[in-house]
Image (cartoon, rainbow, N blue to C red; front, side, top):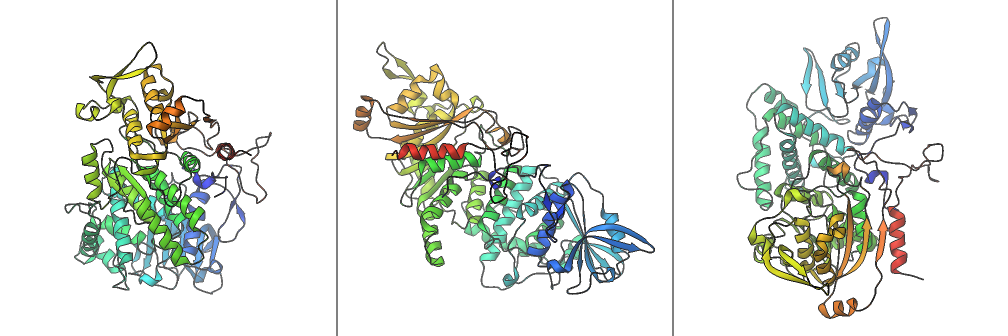
Length: 619
């Protein structure tokens, strides 16, 4: 894997800057980089071609419509009947686009359709919300989608499913539709989307039927809107029953689909044409990740670890195929996914036989990737993220990593995981919950940990554990101890910690405890804006350790050894809530492009990774 680990696609919030040009997807020509173009028009052009299958030469942007003696429009996107001349009488479908803040445009769309005697379909899209119209003899009928090229609007065959290209847009559309129409909170709407993704993939895995069950016909949709009986909802609920049986560790027998049937019908209609299992990993992973970031917020001091920091940790610890890797506070699985892909790319990518390569990748993921998450919802998210990355997800389970070993190991065994316990892990990466709001006061927890007790020092600066428990302890300090317990001798770990753990004089006993258990490999200081886009303004660092047996520690403490210190000054994005990307610019403030014409994220993590590699392998 190359040292350059930060790209524009790695940043949570991706957007064009005003200086950047925008290319029309159909014509390839440069167009105005206004919000309605970049957020709605160009993404939907791409969907029309790549997902719906309409040839570019049957599409035309900015087409003027003749209404009587007056030219109106232009219509944003027009699709013509296959192979026919680009004239108004040959228009099949019209798309009207607006910017996110605009809710108008449906009547404008109808005004474009009306003079086009053969037009059958209309789409209104503002980048977040979407509406579809079908032209009938009685006027305009609301539908759940438009047909793919050369097909009717109905249940597709599984062989006809297409890869998703603009999946983040679709995720946003279905979430917003649920949120707006069912009175659910954003979190509840997110949970319903998560259920439907599991159901969708369950249907794709069923090879006993060539027809899609996760879908709806136009007739069924009409019946749903009119309140008439049909088999649609039962078909989806039957699939969910299968999901609950196949994923007993994720769903309970009492779980149900909480959506109104009309909302369920719309959402299923948005997803039914996609082949999620065979869509590109990067497309699925990036879309799901951004969707999660947009609709999940950490609790109890938890927050997302930005991708640049995850990649830094992965490169520093350099996981290998035979090493078991754990994140005991895995959240949505960032460290797990990036580590898995790092190993796949570095060690398995060159296997020439595709089937053998996939077997090696999946075997590694099943045997060596482990994650524990206390929040059951986040555990579900992590599992779905791994499934979308084509892994089996089986190494993730929901539990409190600070529980007693008996309880923790039993929770793992219930999921078929037998290799979780003291001294079982080769590599550990984690960003544990921290902060004074989530202090642990339960004595049954505190007494399990050395760090749950008070410590004192004598005149010789030797620290001794007292018999008295602390009144409370922040979870990040208990996590340091538990993580060291997880590691084998020789095991390596990277843990994100608030700077106070490394600098406050009152926490000297913590640092002394660490030095009695492990060799400090590196400390990397992170800039204050690192976690602001993820809901926290805490100043933190990453501590890298190697656990050593007592004899080696005793010898190590008697001699000096080197520690790598690094400071990240440029994370690649602004310290605002959106994590707006920062680009390399010249002295005039103009964005600089590389030799391939690509913009470059302004970050110094790549250089830090290179310095670490040079430090590890000096000349």
